[in-house]
Length: 325
Image (tube, rainbow, N blue to C red; front, top):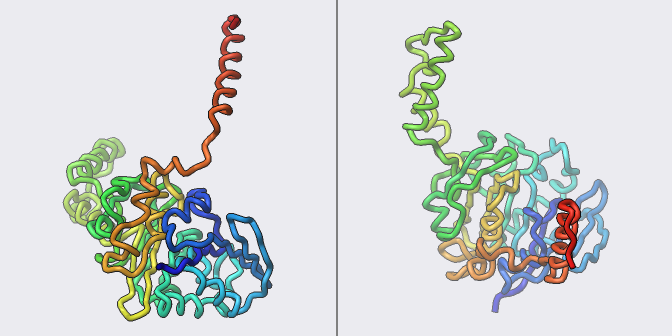
């Protein structure tokens, strides 16, 4: 029987406004509770998000050991790794908790999800030594993304095919075998159409294309576009290969874009099988299908809906000068 542990959020609310009950359904056989840990300058506030019970504790390694080693997945913002964070108190976390997080990943088969929050470009230099990754943040953009072949292999066929990423998603350089979602590139035909759409503007402004400059060369511009955007991913998964190592995920959907909550839920069920999932049959597929995600939310009762409809009908009738007998 699988040991039940917690999902732990460090300085974050549940992404996509997901309720704790939904998060537990992503891995129902191994999740006991959903815990939030808020780190202040001199203390941490630990909250059970289901019962809303909380307790204050000092910032000490022993406190983080208890939190981390009783979790199967830890979700952290990117800024927590940086002493230059503009949002979080990170000095004591780095001093007291970072080595514990490294142990959780390297010796406890722990799953760590790093959420793009502040968007710190140099964060790779802080992350890579901890997890053995080769990641580097390269650009941020509002664009469409697409699953890679590895993405389909890990996450299954039911994931969003072309989600619109908003609020500046952060893309990183990573090995091809780790990329799950990449930037969706325009077709060459569409690219060249947009490229030549500027010709009339240049002519009207009296600008003569200069021979040898890439910006006026359609083919070179296309090659540069493909090279600049290839091999860069908004969601990556690095699976440790040494005994005891777990998984670490870069999750660059900073804007928590529509439709991507399903992908995030899948990330909570990563584990130690060859596919990267805990079991051959992922519980997320059974409980959190995109088309049926809403069945687990607390929807308004039938009586509430009927009351709202009655009020709306009365307003419409008054505006139209009608009465209902």
